[in-house]
Length: 158
Image 1 (tube, rainbow, N blue to C red):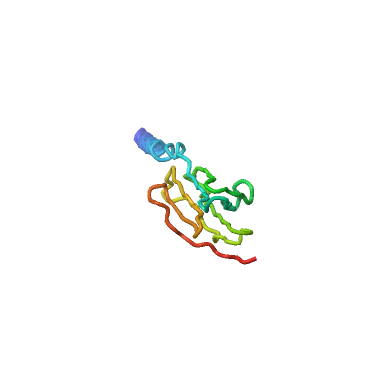
Image 2 (image 1 turned 90 degrees about the vertical axis):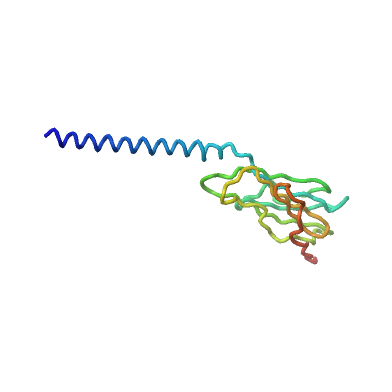
């Protein structure tokens, strides 16, 4: 009669040891993976006007279907606008789309482009810079390399 009880106690002790090990590993994962992400630097999308003196840039950006501030905004020459946000380790991923316009009656337009999306690696402190120049739109990532030409203006005649 005592043997079955001891056998049950052994199973219970082994079960409790396994639970303790799982909780210990979970806590280690929390401190090494999840907690640092909560202290993540914000990611940024920058829209900058380098069209030239006296030339305005119109822009409209939206994130996951929501407008970033006022629906359409303008930047004067050499002005820039920053959108900052934190990517979430779990849940909804960030995606920012923008359209840029310039010229007389804003007839020159960029296509609706993806200015930022959450990376699969959840990297913190990323900067995506979109620069409007007279020949088109340029892109720069994290200000490491010079801005590169990505697409020309599309002329939409009134």
